[in-house]
Image (cartoon, rainbow, N blue to C red):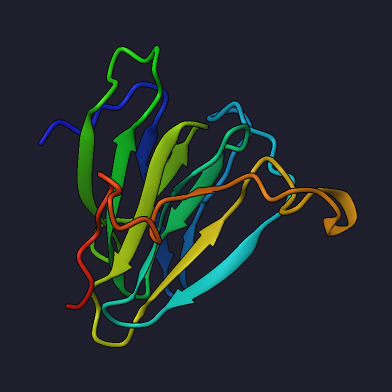
Length: 156
């Protein structure tokens, strides 16, 4: 499947290893035009789905390096995008270290496909619920809409 959705950047990450262990650069301002406003780490239990949802103004920069793997689902829901309607599914995490930049209007979600769960990091460019957590959350949630065209199957 072609993984090209306009504005989505999927970057394979290089692992630097030596006798001490390993290191992976997850963000460099000279490689992506994004200024993170916050960061969080997430563990997702086996077979559990997060999303799908989209943002009106926020860009997410996900980091998938393991432990564990995810099936990442992306749908281009932007009206004026040259890739409008395109759907991508890709495995990311321990087996494919990657950052994935998801712009506003791209519906996204993921499912842990590893028996011990999966680990991810997000560096969004907006604060969750704004400064002091006093603003409306920038999310359009699709997972609770039974008629949503954006579906991620649950379970392993």
